[in-house]
Length: 148
Length: 407
Ligand SMILES: Cc1cc2nc3c(=O)[nH]c(=O)nc-3n(C[C@H](O)[C@H](O)[C@H](O)COP(=O)(O)O)c2cc1C
Ligand code: FES
Figure 1 (cartoon, rainbow over the protein chains, first blue to last red):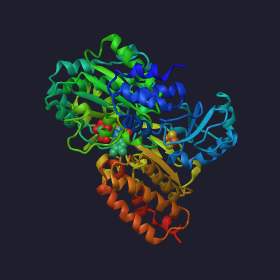
Figure 2 (tube, chains in turn blue, yellow):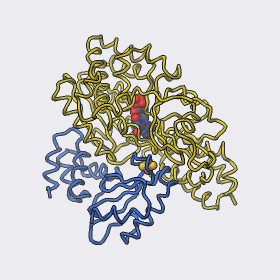
Figure 3 (cartoon, protein in one colour):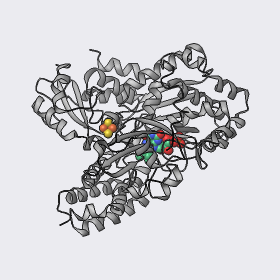
Figure 4 (cartoon, rainbow over the protein chains, first blue to last red):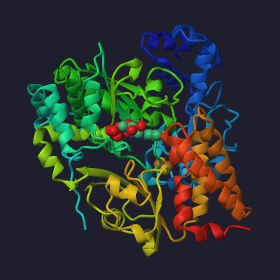
């Protein structure tokens, strides 16, 4: 696994590239390690407060550990009326955790998302940003199996 | 019934999106060549006269916008493509970029030439890394072919913030900051990215440009509604038979979209409401379905064309439940910079929760109506200004649904 210090180095020459760096760190870690904030602040020549402020602003960025595979359930109106709640229930049951939590083995994190732009096949979830559409509770176990 | 007409999606299904040769064989990059043989001002006038208005939601004349950046002196100017596509129910920019990425790049390069910019950015929502891969390949191919000349294009990925679709918040985000909207003026056209003149245009707006240059302003102007010419790409969701995308001339009606191309309501149920333009759009009842979809006609009925998202709801839909969900969206997505939006979206959600839970009173409704009216005037950006629209329009057209839930 690439060290976050090396990832930041790769992006620090890009004007405004701190969000790109955070995205790249998350691709490796699935989250932003707390120590990475101070390193990013130095590399992009902003205060720690600002580097933290940026990381905490965006809902896809997460400071501190979470499960490796991030499952997001779209709860925007079109997915909502198509039965997103049932999908949430099925996911919580299958993984034994609640929305916003990670599994004890560190494999999965469950989070809400707003529309992910796949509204032709509601309800939709994404795993590590890859979309899965036309979901029913029955389809959940097979999809999760791909990541176990 | 209106029939589909593909301008933006002219190459859809006809070319391999990952082959620039396919695009060139289909006539691609001829418009850029033509533009470069014209004067910069001439290109801008052609776009202005075509009547092309922004497809990202605000409906501003594209050529006029380019003119602001063209006539502002600066050592550097930028073209920024807004590919944030954050309005729930919208997926048209994804369809365009997945199927014909080169036409977006060509549109950006034409804009760059016209305003005198050598650098372009595509701000792509963080939800679309798989679209970014396709567009990056297209950029690499265009560079290798040398078709973009001295015009450079870079993709920047967002990280899940609806407000970053607002053009000044988007600029803040490219600069590496929190995506909080700026006070306007100055507008980006004069002082945008890193303080330089910047044209921010939506994907669909830019994808129209090559065709306009190739076929001319008069040709374009003759299509669709006179005050909002051309076509619009619609994306359908909800209880409609054909949950897919269509490109229609802008003189089509809402009925054409929902019942024509859309095929009507699933399972032979009755129509209840349609929300157009995304989650910030107004709700439209059956009695207004014959309204033309163009920007100005929609504004006249208190609705929006917006992004062209079409969210259809059948007779069984609990509208108050949908509105509660939407108010939660805005509470979550408010950036917190201005008080009327930060506080207003929170209180609006609280009240709607109460009403939807069967504990609301007529006073609660009156209070949120007042709050909504204040927000639509006092909020800093379009997010807070539009946030109350779904509530206010359902209150106007579907008051009985609220009354049924009050104590
Ligand atoms: C809260 C908010 C969200 C927006 N989201 C988008 C978006 O996702 N895509 C977009 O093109 N425009 C969006 N806009 C409109 C942009 O501010 C801007 O008007 C547009 O990018 C200009 O391009 P156009 O003239 O080609 O439409 C949004 C505006 C607001 C206030
Ligand atoms: S509303 Fe869920 S993907 Fe668009």
